[in-house]
Image 1 (tube, rainbow, N blue to C red):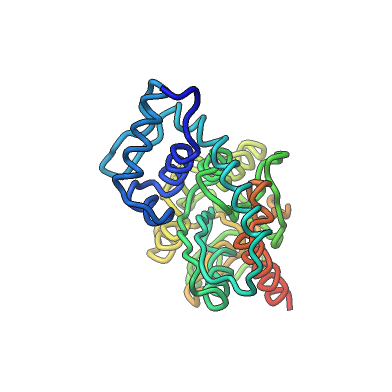
Image 2 (image 1 turned 120 degrees about the vertical axis):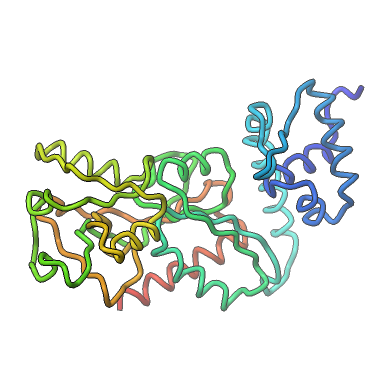
Length: 296
């Protein structure tokens, strides 16, 4: 057995972990799937442990794989940076961005504009709660997160996109919809609709209720922000959400809440060593342009 695994084994492993698939890793590297499988098998033999577990939902990284990926992905990023510095091409003709967010806005307008400018770049976009988003960033499972108040870390680069406040979102035919502002006590008889456990919104709202010694007898917890919107539209309750986390609707209004005057930052968060990748820089530039257009 070799004293150390080959660079091909490390690269094969990194791309399988990135793509979540042996076949997709093979496509990304321009090799056969059998070649990828052999490299992974040899690496597992060398390490004496299993790296991937096959689930119905896809490949799951073992603890050993997560530890290795935290290092090997940095190496792959550095190799990509070197390649981009050497290559002198004028247009971004391909690429792949793994993007997550904890609400549809402001992510969707940025993705839409980016798709117009760089149609060849593939974007995989998924909504996650705040806790899961920070974990995925720390584990380098994603390239970019658009997230509210990301945790401070030397390993993360952040760019503020906007600031917004929490408001009470309700149907425009609700008796409270015409108020200029309302208090948490005004909302107490209502059903409060919140995103799932692990969301920053649920954490902030619960802290506010505790600070002001207010209890809501009826809580409705959903999954993602689109589900919160649907629940409000179907008259299931009132949601306490950041004012622009949902796309505008003629059926909904957002009313300021007296006890929630604070501003919260929506930011782009990126593993710091990926910031200078050409495809990441192109996304950041588009995000800044969209932010400027929305400010007009």
